Length: 178
Image (cartoon, rainbow, N blue to C red; front, side, top):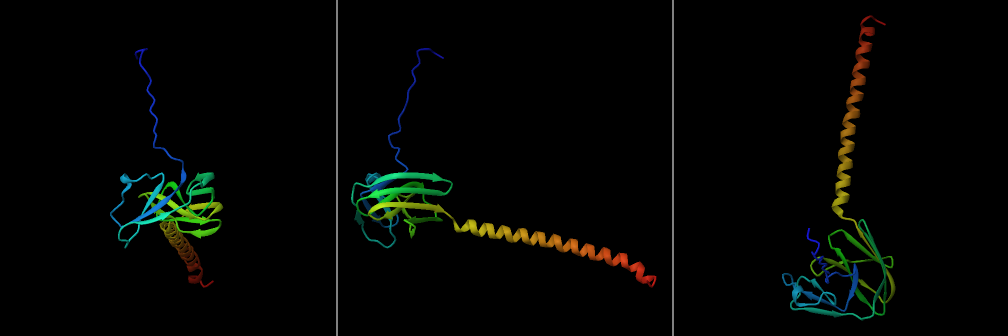
């Protein structure tokens, strides 16, 4: 290596916090997700089936994230918001995410094509998100049923072999008249 070579460091300026508030939500018809036309740090876009045109919903400013933790299918966020707001979480939305706001069930929304968002009321709020896909429950129940069936077949085979062995052992005694 040449001793005069320079080290170049690049800064990615597009990185965001793991959760943020937006000032407005645009509801657009399916097939029209105008992300290249808007500032997604301020505006979230959600696809709304059956809508004609664009629905606009404004939120108050001054909201802040006071705590954030994310681990293995679980996101916990503490927020302070002077008015109702829309909290966008930088985790990928998939069916199976469940949300709770201050312990009450809430519906996570798909915004900006891949992020999650949850409506939060004014004040200090705790938002909890859990990933619990239905397919996982079905897979666990199905696996358990197969495991039980295989073990039941094994146990039945062992019992049948034991009964045959017992019957064979008693057959000479019966033939001798004992």
